[in-house]
Length: 355
Image (cartoon, rainbow, N blue to C red; front, side):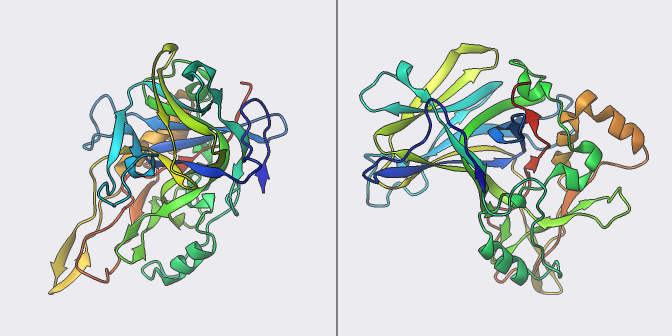
């Protein structure tokens, strides 16, 4: 199910069973690009955080940030007062990498976090998520998600949405200084990739349809992961070092060392979100979810194609690129949405790791 990768810094739980889980979660305009070897085995996942259009064609401003839950750190208060307090680091043309650091050693001795890496459940490339037959009824989706809640397939694939848009410009992951559309990159070399949370509205899941359907087949519909990423078991004698360095200038870096609470999950959240949220309105006295605006920000992913998607746009010159449109759903209460999908992530075809 997962593909193994061995080498210096490999992840191996301690013999006495003392370990914790290091989780890296992503949300927002994030492009997942698998890096594979000649045998097509996954070696690393490069996650590209897409920048806003320089021409300000998109109304929402996206802020790529690294967030760390304080409550998951050693020494944090145990009385619940911290709540969801987080420390944030804004990203600007920077790469994010993860290392393990044995306690008592200098940061210069940190080893890159490299180990077993793969996909959870049926989340391998090529799989399709289970869907509800009735879009406005989230019951079946809830059951499907419960059965495969960690499945990476809840992150939509560009190949399903539009096959001609499935291959990213490899220079965006290979070049040390990529084009300006790349606001930041996260390079993850360990862990099982899966979905951590679906977009929800109250008790129901949000289902998106990618519109227009350019191909003759039916349009792609699916629930979409609001948070997705990797989980890595780490020996408790190691801390996690997060390194944020300027693209093309690795010496220009920021570092933070994180020590997990015993047998807990140490989570780093990397997001590229705007401020779009769900709202509701009264229709004939009934509180319902309003018809949502299409997620126009999704168009930025088409600019990641070779020549910024010129060939694809010429082939379909009379049609716009498919973007996710959310289906309205009847909420069970009058409260607002929780973790809606306004800026969703997507998966591209693999890129050669040695390229």
